[in-house]
Length: 286
Image (cartoon, rainbow, N blue to C red; front, side):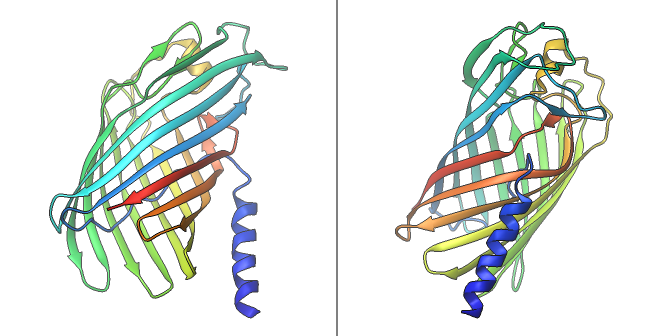
């Protein structure tokens, strides 16, 4: 009974903290064994939002919906080196006009489905004793698109190089891990510092509960000038930053197959939507 109460309070606390907008998942410190595969197909959504966090929060002239279908995979090239890849498909809509907009009606109503920033990466195990330490480099390709009339942007108009140092430790019923690094962007975008971590509880059969924290701070060293329609929608604009918290859960139907779901929220943010993000997916391990 005491354990059940502890589980319930943990889940309830995390859910309440998550009723705020925006976050991303902490990066894993562990590499895959040679020949092992982890793959995940996920759907994430920021439902209709009519507000953007900034120094002076503003309201676009249309409601915006930002959905993503993403295929993510990790494959063990060796016992110390893992290949990483992700392909996001963005489905974005500028819809009905908003009340109390801080902009004149300048963006068109439109729906667009297109590629986001495809990402490739390598993760190398540096140390493995009580703690696991790995170094990682991701490269997000400039594969996104932009529609000026609607302000719909499906990703950063830049290449992004993300070196990180990851550290983690596993225990019998839980694990902890964290990372720190940088996003270095081309084409005049600002670079940023990032740090985050997560804790996962594995003490319930077939279920993993994970709470995570992320912090992203822009160096504000960019020179890019984006069109007014892009700034209005707030989609992948410059100097995006946030302090965020989130919760996700995983359920394993078999040792190789399961589902995951989560929601994310911002404690503070700049140049990102004022809306909670939700996600769900299926994963397969080989």
